[in-house]
Image (cartoon, rainbow, N blue to C red; front, side, top):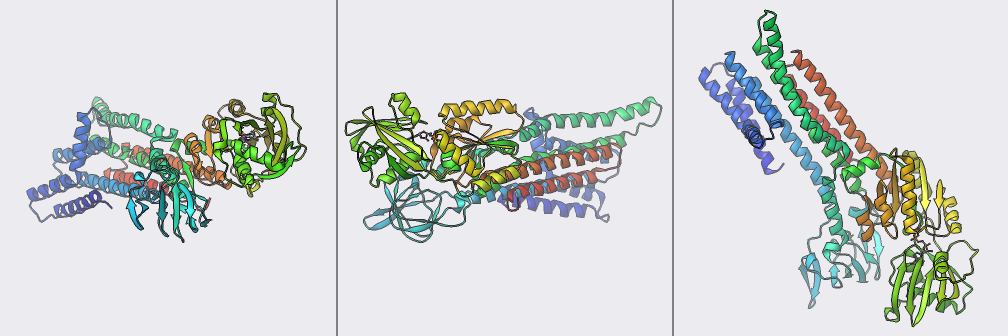
Length: 627
Ligand code: ADP
Ligand code: MG
């Protein structure tokens, strides 16, 4: 409980005690009236104030207004009838406030538990300064500086290890509970915890661009992207409350007038009372609070597993996914290629590899990283000029004055260089030097271990079709597709073709069943943003993916896709349960109230009860254990 909530609790207790005292018949009547007034005033003054302010601002019809009118009306009724019984009016206000308090605590709890999941903000970075460690604000550390991270400390900035070995705990980011071993040369991302050894890390990004800052920003913004259900509820509340107020007015006026016309006793106070009860019942708090809370809890539960959902609207779309389209490299396959052969080389094999690695020195494509790894040494960038990357085809660069082209069949066709096709399975990188064909390098990529299981899990989660798109050649694509058992595949696609294909599929499905695209953000950011929902994998460290995607999977485990869908389904189920439950109870109570079968006591209990149950139900979305 925070301070405000504690104050509220004190007010509630004091008010309840005064209300009990006011019921002591031995006290003189004027004293009891003062006690009633004090009890009501202490617990309800802020509601009355907010209601008055609402009227002043022209936003008349809200819950505060309903409660103020209902309780003041009940007081007026007691005065007119000379019953001297103000219990009902005070108790309604009291219970309403108890409900509000409970709801505030629940919201605070779920916010905090998400906050704790996302408690990855580093407080400081250690800089070595004359043999001493000095703590500085991570924002002050320039990229390229060397920082020291001691065991047990959080890694404050992205970078690579220059010295030291250790194990790092990535659980807060990926949900992966096994620590990862790291050594000099490895990349580390901010937000993880250094467990065992002292690490010296050369930072590669400023704090604002580091993984941790981007994730925090993403989580903080997620509540502003509202889903259809959520918008529906706020629109609903806007028409609902005025409708209820006018309904109550009609209930207070019409029956007595009809009775008068029929020559009967009007029974004004009976109908006024029913109208007031009507107002109490109709308070839409359960809906208004439990629906955003449900989505919030769903997003929190997902992020605990390393699945970041950028808004509740995406959770809603995710729950309706029927088609999942995958990118090949880095998504279905590991994206870690091994050189498996060098053929038809007009130079020595090593020389060909050297040209390729140098030409690829600036690319972030998995292929180029593999070629650089096979080359062994850090490429000397001063030998390379005029680098031009053609996405989906390859790269062009001038190395030692020789114009090098490294890429697939398409690139060679474009340059008009005749090439020798390769019959072995794998991805082929043709090399041309100064426009002359110089042979090709064959590289092979392996599928991720659990892609087969992941595809089966997707089908179990209700996905009807899986498709693989790739810019790679037909033979490589076919081999992978058959091995993992994907429904359909298309090969030889440029990034633009992928967008066009996804658009075709979107049109064909006509909005029934949503389409998700899963990619790694390299060469496929446009598709990520064009699909109904873009899922980026292995996003730790990839800027483009975090920007373009709607759902970000922090590691590259393909099983997470079906987990994300299952979590979304559960969350939506809970939200719909709450909508139906709250509306049904309200409707029944309204009917009973209008018929005079339920009084204000029943009304306030129904209202607070529904709210408590709905909030508890919403909190279930936080739990993603047994899906
Ligand atoms: P995918 O669709 O499988 O993710 P991309 O669209 O990233 O693949 O690339 C498609 C093809 O383009 C690759 O299979 C490769 O033949 C070629 N290619 C792309 N980038 C490069 C590069 N940097 N070096 C060499 N070839 C490349
Ligand atoms: Mg790709």
